Image (cartoon, rainbow, N blue to C red):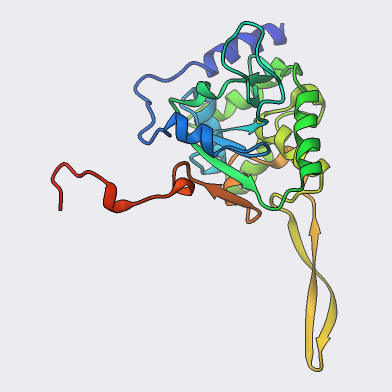
Length: 252
């Protein structure tokens, strides 16, 4: 019974809200040329579940996907290759073509200095999770935060993102990607504490910074945006930008 209710609720939450077109969509070809395997693509969604995530995280970004390149091979039907892996409520972990995001505002977050071996491990882990389904009974947890009359203190909101019990069948978009980076030891937003003091000079004492890994279930899409270890890549700028070449309607 709860599962059937969850499936119906998922359909309601994933319904696009009318009149919510993005105001700054990315150029699809520039986005395609800029992406590299291992990049995290953030999406500003417009459905009801996106509204809940934006509210809980105080952020523009409601969804995340991992770009894996062409490792999945060409589709048998001759359609566009699937180069992204994401997790969604109704389909679980799946691969999609990049064209699925062409009508949404996106941001590329690139892990800096990621080794080729860890990049392959990252992609392999995401591929191994393809087909994992959402436990639709847990969607009721998320729906509660859509109620406009329910005040949620800001210090509780991060914990609310951890909807599931940690089981693989209850992964959501950002937590599965965070788990992939955790497995290769790449930081997102570690908790930093001061360790024992170390001496580097005659009168120079400094504290060693000790990093503690946060549980992957607590990560939201926006954390990749604010992480100091991910570079924000803006499509087109890395190909060379000449502001003198812009054409103005009421030119200067």
